[in-house]
Image 1 (cartoon, rainbow, N blue to C red):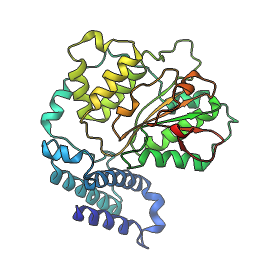
Image 2: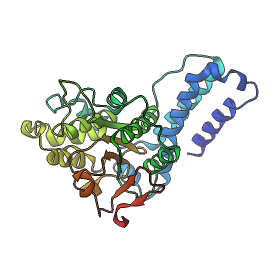
Image 3: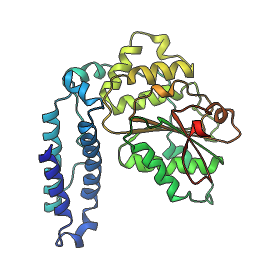
Image 4: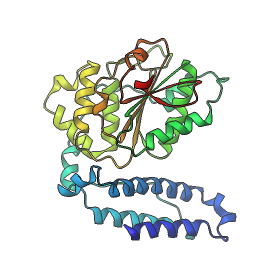
Length: 322
């Protein structure tokens, strides 16, 4: 682990040399790759040294080859150093946490095509298309506080943050936060209910099936667990019940899954209550927007695993204190 950290430091020292500074704008792609690789490694190191976390179980059951993973991260930074020095094209393929082949095998056979999926529901596409051009920019401290909540490493942190206020303002925040975590490859899924198309596939009946399929693309273990849960049950794969979907497609497959660092799921303008959110793993964070007068806002009161934030308020506070 010390060797990996030294290799990372060598990479940063190289970038910050006096000779390199005038040419940084020409090496934007390499710098972006270094930033993304740093984020991935930083969460790996954080969770590795945290004895409370899931890595203890992972090592015990040999799901993860730690030494090989550390070496892969080292090699990734060495390759980035070479790309930076030689002005060579950099690979866009990020070196991420790898699990063993036997874990990936079952997931490779999974076929979720008959689980409903909402096309064009991602916040980065749907929100931008329907936001007014004169929508005021949200305060930077609010964006920063939401980012800090997502990446927070406390095991007691709330798994869900409910942001309520004017629809356009909430959607703007969902869009901006989503773009930042998308850049860092930390946006597990997003679902925006806003839209004015005559033919629209977005509905609470395919909300969590869509999110589950996105998460299966992010994590091979989750994909394997999801397939084990629904692979032999056609009726379950095709269920349109949001509560059943959340429990069977999100909660159940998430058990014992290793998430290297946090992954954000955004639901913009939620209209259905999420039960049992306290059972979510600590590295899955749901950012949910709704309006103050919505029944969904009232239903979230008094739940300690939910953080509530009202637009226009200066500070975040726990839901059970409001």
